[in-house]
Length: 59
Image (cartoon, rainbow, N blue to C red; front, side, top):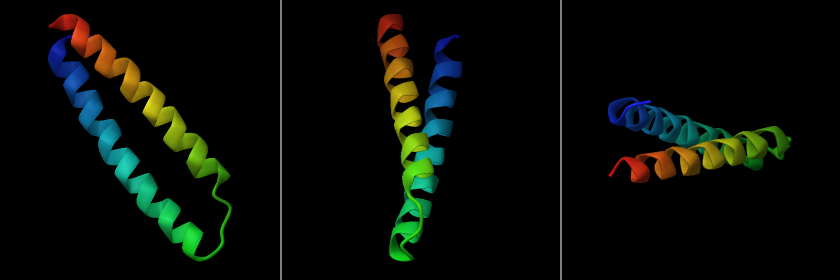
């Protein structure tokens, strides 16, 4: 991936992360099952870390 593709993917993942956090807050309020969302958030965090490392290597 080139720099633009990585940056776009990072922005996309950040938007997903914010959306999932909001959903998590709603589920927490109604005492719902949080595990699936927590797993998704962890996956996004790992992917963001990898993408940021790739971006740093391009510099």
